[in-house]
Length: 451
Image 1 (cartoon, rainbow, N blue to C red):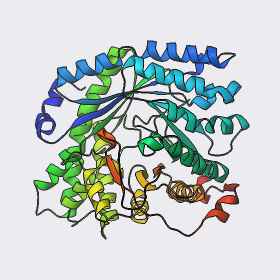
Image 2 (cartoon, one colour):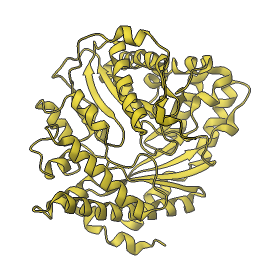
Image 3 (cartoon, helix red, strand yellow):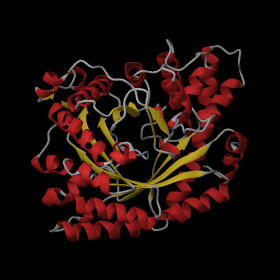
Image 4 (cartoon, one colour):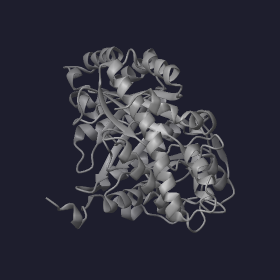
């Protein structure tokens, strides 16, 4: 049983160490909205989202005032829209705009779920739907999109990987006046999860119930402060301290999640205990790694430090809640973490090192700016590499890269707010086009055959 006294333990974390509830995300099933036409479906989608989430912002603000815990984002995720739009895929943009209209009406920060799941195959309607993503992301404000192109059970759909390289390039071009901002709302997954509360990859899985509340907690600053308090500790002691800290953070998240679900008449889904950084100093995963003993994130030893951090966070969190889910671990978004930003600007981070780090963290190559003239097949190859890490290691990996139009290596893009800024990073110049052109399916690894 959790009560308000559990939160009192975290007062210092809130006031001094940047602890917050990063997001309350309401997942909503859109399956009851499928109608005979795109216009009729779009109307039903708008009405359902607005009716189910009409009190989301009010309840979140009330809980924040009542418990004294900042709740930074209020979000909604919906059933992958490609499923809802299957009968009229060419007109999917109408549903996308209806979702964005609903997000503005509700006053939420983002709405995720303009998504497609094509990890084993890609039907004609799904391909048509994916081709609408650049138009939709360039003409909407709050809508986010994701595409799952692989899994440990099915392998990697290289036809979808090839398609997504072009989709990312087109999305960047359509939002060139904002440094390719549309790509910040688009993520390509391997092993996507159905209960992720974080954007841009959130969608409401078909295995979920009708309306669910998922909460994402955040506490890089809290963990960093805990490590600072034991400067002479060995790594075993550090791991124990991180576990105890993650336990306290997760208890606060579970309390808020349960109470939000109760007040909103929804089911309590999960607490995602990912360490999600921000551009604010003292709220950085990179600075945690440096506090562990690295002169700069990206140097030798970075992957080992990140592996220990991620594992300790998970171990502490699962002891505090029976409903841990989502991604849960440590995020390394380059533009959203002040330590990562500064390391990239001084050349201490490269995409190859970030790729190695993704083998042991929560997601993958996240919010990385690359030259605007990067070929689409190079982007596809980056996606394929990251998907391979996820497939072989049976974990979620993702790619959210921004080919910044007109920008080259060393230039900077600035998206503001939680999305931060990023120095444009180099990519390999050698071509991968013949590999990407082969298409087909990279078969699932042998360990997928476990039934």
